[in-house]
Length: 111
Image (cartoon, rainbow, N blue to C red; front, side):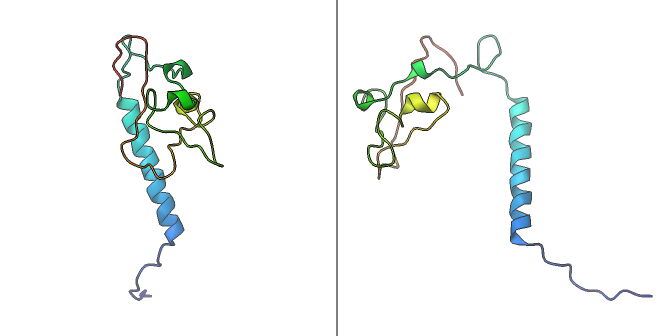
């Protein structure tokens, strides 16, 4: 018995999105596995909150801006919190030319 030619079934957008996400994660893991750690002894540095500061006094010296509204403030959303595994959020409306300073205590290659 012959099977008539018919187009393949369409793939749902959610399935395609998941395939793309899975491939992206696979590529990142492959690149990370090949990356050479930047530390002098060939190891990755562990982040240290002491490398930066937070709070209103840090703005302009350690960081370009920090949110200060109902969603966060300089004491809980600055670069120190980022290094603790949290977030740094810039002031509302500031999307370009944002920066933070990290003082690693010595000359250290970073990437």
